[in-house]
Structure formats: structure tokens, C-alpha cells
Amino acid sequence: MEHHLPQNIRAMRKARGFTQEQLAEAMGVTVGAVSKWELGQSAPDLSTLMELADFFDASVDALLGYTLRENSAELAAERIRALRNERRFDEGTAEADKALQKYPNHFNVVMQSARVYAFSALERSDCAPQRRALAMYQHALTLLGQNTDPEISEVSISNDIAVLHLALGETEKALEVWRKYNYDGLNDAAIGMTLAAHCKKPDEALPVLSTALVNSIIGIIRIVNGYINAYAQKENPQQALQIALWCCAMVDGLRPEDAVCALDKLEAAFLGFCASAALDLRDETAARGYLHRAATLADAFDRAPTYAVGSIRFYCGKDAQLSDDLGQTVDGAVENALRECSNADALLRLWQEIKEELQ
Image (tube, rainbow, N blue to C red):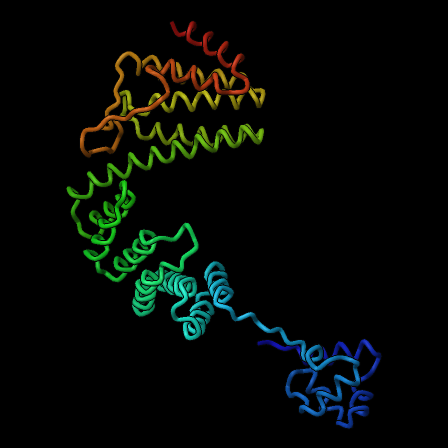
């Protein structure tokens, strides 16, 4: 609860054109008393406060300027979340302690308290708050039935618990949790990193990291495809071009030197999108360059196609094959990609010209 009595006495006095001496005389107090009120060094007693309110034609509440903080559990949780986002961890943990006294079994209060303690502890490498956060997360699991946030689940909370176990040096406990909730390879990256960096087990780590690498690549390609389409719909070819080029650079870094790669078809299709964006930016020279690169990839890949994930640089896991719906050849994949573009006719004409030049 906050009040603004000193500021309000000063503001109301000045609004009515009174000096401190005139107000002191009206209230039957010394000038020094009024000065202390306005500096916040002392406060009028209850009877004088009521006289002041009457003198200024205001209610006592208005004179005090009370701001009553809403103390519901949800707003308490929101205050804790806001303090964490602002990285005001000391204030956040203090707010969490107060909220937990009032609402020890409210899911959102417990979750936000756990998070502010965890963020603070991980940044400072402090074990005591880490233990506190761990206990809160475990308690949150028992309250999960109250949860209304679709982004929070038993899996997400358990993975947060694993992070704290790792920070506390409890590596095996962290791995146990990550493995238990490793649906569709969700935690492969964390498991592989822990095996390599903390357990010093490279032979166990590399196959897991390899699976995580391929899954991450597939995820990034989907994300980039989504961005390209979104930017095209928003008529922002510059951003579409930049993110497509970034993806192509990533794929280039994953191609073994002087060899074809299972990702070549995908890169060629993205180069087609780069050409489309370049044409929208009225840069036909750049568009030709992107299509020339796509045609070179198509020629090399279609002569000796491979879909083996082992053709991806750094991969050292089980034998597996990549699949896509882009067409049987890279040439076909590029054409399919170009047909999806708003400037398809111009792109397909350029594509045919470039292929003829390379023959």
C-alpha cells in the first residue's frame, strides 16, 4: 500500500494559492510542522488530517492519495513475472516470498516464484536459491490441474527441473529427467551436450547430438519457409531474401567439401525463393545469380542423388534417409518452388535460360 500525502499537501496548498505560513496558521500549527509534512519527515495526526481534508474540500482518501495494490493471486503472480523480465531479481524473490505466504498452493504464484528464483540463482550460481526453485517446481507439478497456460505442461516443468539439477552438479538426475521426457527427440540437444560437456562421454554424445542436429535443421527449414511466405504476404521481399540467404549459408556449412548433400534439394528451392525476392526488388542480376547457383546444385545432385543423412557434415549417428515433397529431382524442386511465387512466369523464363546456358 502506498500513499502520497506529502506531495498532495504541497499540491493542494499551491493550487489554492496558500503559503506554508498561511496553511500553518489555518491549521493552528507551526510553519516547521507544515514543512515537515511536505518533506515527508512527519505526518499530521488523525484529527489534523481530517481538518486538512475538510480545509481542501477533499476526502481523506484523496488527500492521502492511497494506491491500494490489488492483492489477488493472479496479479501477485504477474508482478513476480514482470520483475523477473526486468531482471530485478532481488525484488522479484522478495515479492515471491510474500506471495507464497498468502497463496502457497496457487499454481501460477508457485510457477512464477520458481522461475524468478531459478533465473536469479542460475545467473549468480547460488545453490541455495536453486534448491528453493527446485522445490517450487516440484510443488508446481502437484498443482498442475490448476494450470490454464497451454505453454506450460508436465514436460516443460520437468525440463526446468532438469536444468536446475545440472546447475547443482546433479548430472545423472538431470539426464534421468531429460530422458524420461524426451518425446520425439525433444531433449536430444540437452542430453548430448550434457554427455559431452559434463560426463566426458563423447562416444555416447555424438550419436545423440547428430540426431538433434538433423531435427534442428528440419525445424529451421520449416521456420524459414514460414518466414518467407509470411514476408511475401506482407510484401516485404528484402526480409524474405535475407532469411532465405541465411538458411542457404547454414546449409552450405553443412555440406562436405566437394560432395553432394541430402540438403542440396532444399537449398536449391530456397535459392529459387531468393531469386523471386530479388526480382521483386528489381535486381535481375542477383536473381540470375541465385538461379545459376540452384542450377549448379541441381546438376551435381541429380547426377548422383543421395538422401542419406550421413551426407550431412558432422553427422555420425545411425543410417537414415531424408524425405521431402519437393519432387523427384532438384531441377523439379526448383521449378515447383518458382511456380509458387507471385512472379512465377518471369522466374521460370530465367530458369530455362540459365539451364540452357549451362548445357
